[in-house]
Image 1 (cartoon, rainbow, N blue to C red):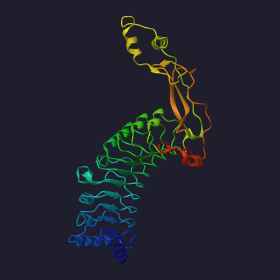
Image 2 (cartoon, rainbow, N blue to C red):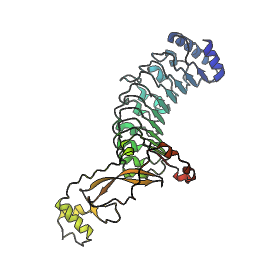
Image 3 (spheres, rainbow, N blue to C red):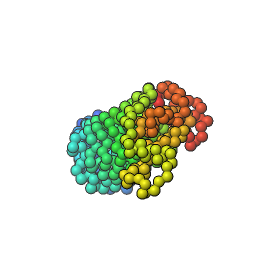
Image 4 (cartoon, rainbow, N blue to C red):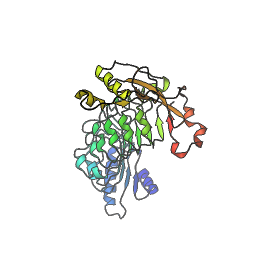
Length: 371
């Protein structure tokens, strides 16, 4: 174990770096147990333990004794299929790195995790490069979690219970098989970085505009054909990555339209012609219906609609530099969108980093990476 001793001397008393050791897992286990015994009487506690790339099939049993003050544990690049009960003894653990293992079954995380002290201490959890097909329920109870990485797994969906992670600031779920973004994701008040690239997402819920802390949104290499207009409400967004989506390489337009009902035609006429009335002049259902009117977004139109509208996708200027395809709801097929005349969108990635961005004011330094 000369390599380990050298690593410890270099890293200092607070860190034990035993990465890529040329010893068997059994030898590592016994050496770790000995180190744990040594640390019990030490004045300075061991805070960081690095055990990546050691062919570990399970967590060392020695973690259960002598490492109670550990704040960071790295067991990445091993052959772990489960994180055993030894993890629960690390009462003050803040960072757990377990990427590139074989985790993913129903017993991948230890029983009682949600009731353990880790629920209050763990802030960073990296489970990327494993075999998870769904997020474990106990993971969604880690209320102190600030960073969650589960990229490169086999996740099929994001559970609505993701909203339980109220302290979350960074969420990385790239490289999975996710098809939908749940609206509940918008209930994370501190979320700053959201990475959903390389999935199968077809639409973005308008509720995402409620993520007022969001600064970076990565959606590249999905199946997006449009964005909700509400995306423009993300005023703190600095980077929006969209390359590799259908909306970037073609202009999509949908004018599916069903004729309005007689009730809607009557209500439109009253609203558009500004006809005065009293509650005694109209049937009750028409009176209630009139309160549901929505103004057409085209200022040159002045029309309204109720249940019947035209869905249309138009490119809208964003930050005075890029054009985003947003969904509009118009009152009729004859009504044209107020957007300025379309200029062809860029498919060159170099435009997202063009030199003239340097002259843009700091509060408008927002990048839309289209290609």
